[in-house]
Length: 287
Image (tube, rainbow, N blue to C red; front, side, top):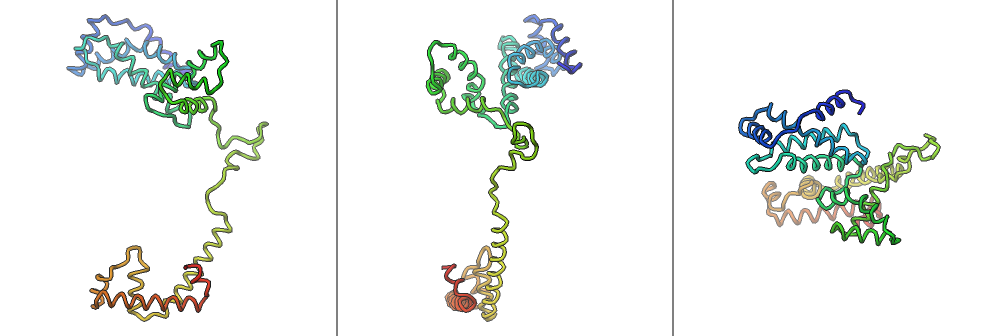
């Protein structure tokens, strides 16, 4: 522990006296019924050694003991907020579950940049896989990975495929995309440089832009062959995200929807003819 404040907190927690059952019950009632902050403080201080003890059990996951203790303290306060003294259960028994759950959630969030499962089954697998694997490794039998996964699967009631996935995740450490590719630390190339981009290539972007400009020019020339009413119908019906209905457009123009359909058909035919005269390939590509 490098933080002096944390070391002081741990020393204070280890010196804090244990609470007798009657005193614990009284403090819990004062906190629950009256919101007595001093009673809550005494309960929390008296049980911080439980938090520290629990944190030491999770230290092999490579996370800071300070952070684990802090998360455990959050779980301790959550337990105090939910504790029901009338049930005649010792607070330490009740708080242990909340402290462990808080630390486990913290580990799952921070152990790897790749998020693991958060279901109860996945949590059990994450926190028990190493222990079960080590125990089975001591067995005199020579087990293949598949046989090992099957035995762990049976022990935890989890699919063997999930066991294999979790084992791979725990075995493979995270690697930064900014890490150098060369083992000697040469910074000339990073892993990120070799990721395949899903963006179009520069020549494809330029070609697409040229094609769009050419099509827009062709369309503008073809639309110039329409009279004003035909042009309005085509714009309202075909060149908007939500085209107007025949009935609505007929009401605007003062004609029937059937007449709008006829004008639209004639206008489309004029557009096809104009586009063919510009470039016959246009119609073939659109067909």
